[in-house]
Length: 400
Image 1: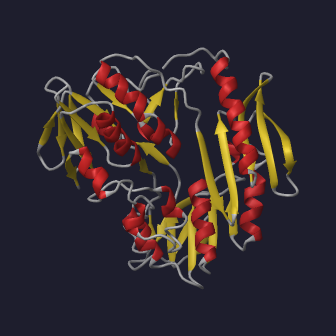
Image 2: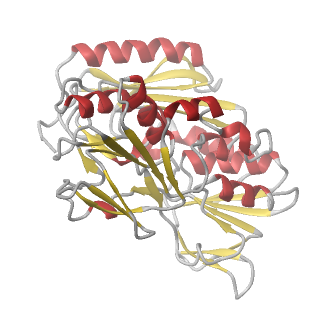
């Protein structure tokens, strides 16, 4: 290959670019990114950065020397609008195009929203460092902050805003936030942490619109007609993979870009990594999409090796895992557990808020969750990885 285009300049794209050089690619490398910023770390945006413990320069994923060593051509501040595999071209929103022999799709995901949110001054979708800076400028002691969405990022934002002295209301359409992620036995603990730290939680009724009345945001309306007053609103109701630009390209799209176990798409000179990739783990019987930082970091070495080889010579075997920090507590999870799995506390206790719990399905451990026990979590995670590596697939034998 003489030219490789990496479409996406967040962590997955950055790692892919690094791997291309580390694995011996010495041709033209083009990195395309929608933001004008060089690659930076996003997880701190809802935690340390939001409370002012980090500054923008400290988020950079690479040093000046590392960026120089890439010898890459940067096309930042423009988005990819079409992939034309017949001509080997990535068409950009500014009317230009990049001709490439190989393409790494790392376009991540796009935040979902509620009506009125994007037009309302004082309403934020925490997608970028600029969004986080704008929110940081509005969160102060006594401010009324409404967080729409009780997932992990929404919980982190609520925690950060409370630490700054804001009056926080958390809205979630589920009766218990995080129930689909952690299960009904463990999710209530996160709900209790919010309430114990002074956050008002409104569950079971989704937000329908953000109210502005022609001025900065004044509140959030719920499906039952109630209005929650607000000086600032943050919407974190989920995300969808950024794949619209790939329609008509010949790639298979189904809640992401469908790949095999090596992150290779239907076009052998196109691979997909990170949030946007729906891949088939060798130890599973159906495809998954993992929108966690760890996946974005760990998939690129495999994907790049297969891209440069021109075929699938290596499989991605990583187990999805994530962590979160809220109200001084550390939450960690790994595996493929679901809300219907049997949950067993294997170390510590729920009452003490220090425990490790496993998820069991068909007599096998499929996931592990820990609250405030990081060392013990690491041990159980290693056991889980070893068990999945040695085991046969679990569940229905469907294919993507």
